[in-house]
Image 1 (tube, rainbow, N blue to C red):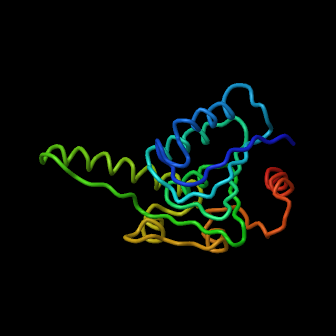
Image 2 (cartoon, helix red, strand yellow; image 1 turned 90 degrees about the vertical axis):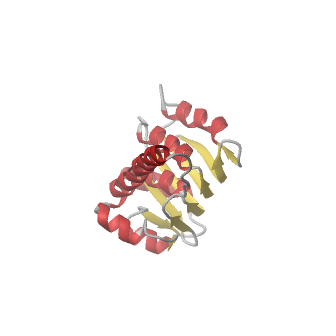
Length: 186
């Protein structure tokens, strides 16, 4: 099986460690048109970043004609957790973790400006719920209570597996390519 690989590390921002402007074309190029591989592996070690840029990556992944597998080693936090949740399969190293939380925003301007911003925030929040619902099978109310509550929700590899955020936990020292081949056959 032939794989393409992409590495997401550091902050997901326009000019951060994972410069989204430079890499979204990589994601789109790998998963659109005539695939150059049987699957795309996205290696994630990120503290997250800008939700809108993260959703752009999620949308590219969800439109992929080839399977996309996330390998979380060790961290997928915030927007990076949503990227991992958008993949066809998501795996996490045994000493890894996921952090999910509601996004931050601020309101400025007139009363009507603030109403418009709140509508936009509701749209973003619903997009997060939809991704998490599709991945875990949880109801929106369960997602709100367990994952998008008023604090950061930190999950160990095992807890992420139990709630359905990942499809498996990879033991240290395991051949990642063999594990990916195995989960793609399931």
